[in-house]
Length: 321
Length: 309
Image (cartoon, rainbow over all chains, first blue to last red):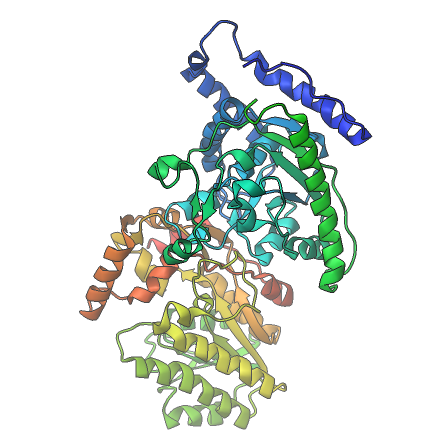
């Protein structure tokens, strides 16, 4: 699997030009670590882990946070937890999903609402976007996730989620985070997207309007993101709503491996991720406007993401490379 | 000269506020008190009557003292009495106190409610503001009388716009003079917790809360206010800082144990309290800070160090 196979094809739009050239630069980086002739497994040495740990620590140290004397920020984030979670995520990012990032320069400073497509049964898309913004964005940023209402009720998950910077996705939490100049990520498709069936891949589901009202009321720019790859990582064959209700889960997906192989079946396929960061859009208007007016703005964001998805899907040669 | 009547003055928080009023007020305040138990060794300037807020005698005190402000701290927070007694003191008692106050021309009432009235629910945001519904009865019905007391006071503030009624909802209070509910829970050798849950908890020092109460009187603040200290830490960090040891148990085992032990009087909290060890109940205190200019002086580290004693 040659990394620097060929540069991504040029696009017509000038914005895309910029994205492509950035991609070439970011492509060159992981390639450095490959040594010719060595078996791929030989790369995973303690030195590599230590290198990643150091790199992550160095990047995280550059991110301004509001930690109290016990090391927690006002929303329960703890840098040490992020650091340990990131080592594994970076391995996934570089060697499993081999994430390619486009347009990372579009990530602004200050408050911003990141809006992306959501798929793949488990929220690895959020994790990969989070790794990208820590490792590749200048300045690096920690992405604050807006979690499903169900997550805080799960033992261990609730704590892991909060310590690594996510919160329950209530409007108040989002407003407070944006007021604190944080970068908040939201997936307006929600569970509809996360558990969409394989036949629906790269078809954006209904977008909720809440994110747009929040963006308007807090005067926050929206950064559209298209993630290509995640929608094939765990092909949903069916979603058993009745079992989901029984277990109090938002969805109960059936994939070729889950629940057949038990928890192991949650392991995603080694698809290749391509993440496209679009240009920020600053909407203006009344946050209490009627649904029709909000809908127009929401659809604009949705169109931008759908277009980027279509382009990304059309341009790749394979799901896995 | 402002005449302040404090109910529950012999309690830890009551004594502190009384002393704060005397020392920081520069003689601006005259302090009167009512409590069921006497306060031996109280400063001579404080005039105190031993009475129960449910008794007729209490109305007599209001009639005689003619206070400008009543600071209502007398409420039952423990479970050693029948629930009916809690209701009688906290809900009926507060309602009557407000009625007496209206009758005798008291201009200001401060009710000491609690952050717990919002309840600890999984979908609670961090930093709930005062507009959030008081949902504690959903998971912790044993203390719903606190939410009722809070709502009785809020309703009265609408009915009597000429009286400045303030409802204070302070977060977890710790301090050397206090045996608060959270202190009782955290300051034991082994603290039962739920495996896999570690919510953020906010704390305020007893002295800061006393100052907040004095400020409320001084600024004649009205409405419901969250009173928040310097910040929040996870439950397990608080347990560690207080020198206790957390004993994480599976939720089912914990609920069964707590229910049994509580019934036999071996544990001070009913199982409903467990949700406060699972989910956050953290408040936005900006409204109170803006209205009164309150700023906590004690850091989290100070609070934990002080509570040790």
